Amino acid sequence: MNLLKQIPKVDKVLSWEGVQTLLETHPRPVVMKAVRNVLEVLRAIVLREEGDAGLFTDEAIMKRVNRELDEINSLNLKRLVNGTGVVIHTNLGRSPLPESVRQTLNEIAFGYSNLEFDLATGERGSRYAHVEEILCELTGAEAALVVNNNAAAVLLALSSLAAGREVIVSRGELVEIGGSFRIPDVMRQSGAILREVGATNRTHPKDYSAAVATETGLLLKVHCSNFAVVGFTAEVSAEQLVELGRQHSLPVMADVGSGNLVELSRRLGCNEPTVQEFVSAGVDVITFSGDKLLGGPQAGIIIGRKELLATMKKHPLLRAVRIDKLTLAALEGTLQLYRDERRALQEIPTLRMLALSKEELAETAKQLAARLQNAAPDVVTLSLVEGFSQVGGGALPLLQLPTTLISVGVGDKSAQEIEKAMRLSPVPVIGRIFKGAFLLDPRTINEEDIPALTAALQGIAP
Image (cartoon, rainbow, N blue to C red; front, top):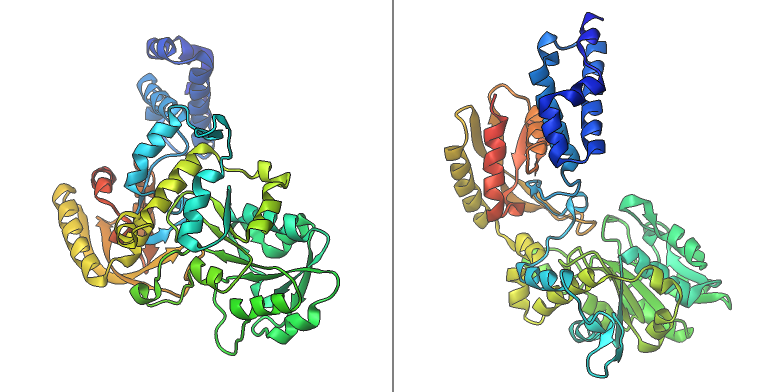
């Protein structure tokens, strides 16, 4: 209780010379908030029976006020270093954009653009036209439309094509992805009526045929990109579903999730279908994400038959889920790279990181560890261990990518203490803990991350 009496009141702190100086350069409400926050923290420390009298000197409180003011004025959304080895990390912003997009974003963000202005005619144009042609060129589809994410793409497609009618889908494809996005919930919101067929692990063409009725409006296939069913399984292929759709004069839609535009099977040893394969199979409407394997910004891309997409373009929901100019600029810049597959693999960070070989990563880890060790305090020790990276983003869940990890030791600190200190660095460094060690994966660390990594290691030393 004696310590509580040493905590000054807000008005007294505001009268201090140091705080008066802060008031000359910061809004008064912001400074008052910083002071109140600091005093509340000090009260909590005392009530927990922690700390000592040194915490309550004018100088100590002033330092806390300055730090708190810096924290209040800092941006909540900030750049960080992804050392997890998860390439498409949803919590860390998924796919980083290609460097070639940077200048385009600068030009579009800080000036006016022809977002909805047709330069050829001088009349109002469509924002969706800027990427429709190149999407059709790359995928072979008749038409294309882009909304703000794949959930919105699925919602718009179902609302436009099947509201009030049954949509037949395999039980094994009623997926849930991050953020509790579930196909049945989206279908319910769209006004479509779910008609489940088959079993969790096995669905056959006859299951779809038996379910077709006068109320049927659509056949739906959902690519299970974020989980795998193995063992005694069977699924209906896109080709088989298209044939059934033609027999019953029903459109076929596929949500293919990750939006893969290049052949990855040979490079990664996986079996991830491309968007083009679904187009070739004759699927009428295809939806996928822009910020997963495609390597672009968050977007929901819809491609397919011209007459079906024309219906979506007239739907009132489209305005609620439309994309902005920055998404369009980033997406168009990313798609341009796909015109040359070799360039796409080299310049799109997601594809480049996924394609790194075990040997390349071993050498990168060795060089990176040496650079960091030379700059770090003596108490920091770095060692190399073999491990695996992950694709992430709900894509290729069974694929393990061999890598060499950097294990970080700092004196007698635990892995949890190291993880927290790195995470709270000025430029946060996010790694992972495995078997009692804090690990960094060079697969997702770029050259421009080295100064931040160095600073974090220097700041962690006791």
